Length: 184
Ligand code: SF4
Ligand code: SF4
Image (cartoon, rainbow, N blue to C red; front, side, top):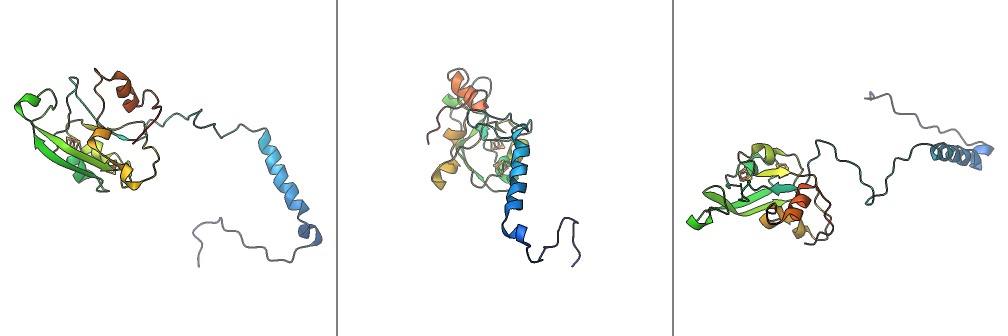
């Protein structure tokens, strides 16, 4: 069979000589490699005390956005769910009542909105599909958890806090300051 690359090395099946049998030469070679790395710049970091900066194109946990008046932007049009290749988004729409103009920007809103983070591949297509700038992928990531159910994020988990009444929570959701403890 023709090899796709030139990287495969034939296996050496010669019988071992006496120096190979005592393995000292191989141990010495291994120690030499270790020794060479002592003086090189360390690539490991002390996480979580130290953190690497995110790439500018990093896509993390979803946030459901509010407008400048703190109203929910999502109008439950379903375009994000249709665009999602992993079928991770589900929602139920409801009509805004006359006294709810201060809560929802549009006449229709998402009464239920869920994202299954175990399905999500963080591709960002939901963000691109949204005509209302209502969903975006932030610079935080979904924390580890013990049960599968905990990875189904409800609207309460996703909705960004109101920047006027909860500025600290707003900054955490934006990834501007670190979340100290996440309990679900
Ligand atoms: S990031 Fe991609 S996979 Fe995840 S919910 Fe959005 S569209 Fe679906
Ligand atoms: S997040 Fe955007 S695309 Fe998805 S239902 Fe709401 S308004 Fe429509």
